[in-house]
Length: 83
Image (cartoon, rainbow, N blue to C red; front, side):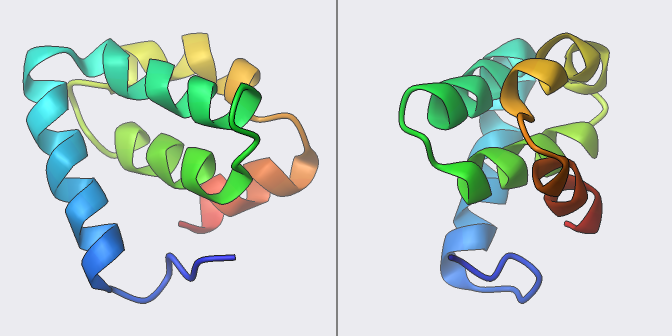
């Protein structure tokens, strides 16, 4: 499982890409998080995308709509909150 709490190239790249995409289509970032969680079954990346999106002004209006779809377990919620 990746360590999102320490800065590294992958986490920095994800943040930069999410910021760029959210400028044009902020809802798409959250759709990707749901896709990553539900279809690809990748918890950690989906949780990280949710956490990054929740911290971006453009994405905040859509977080509530997609949060329940992407967060399936209590531990998912804790991962999002800890990031």
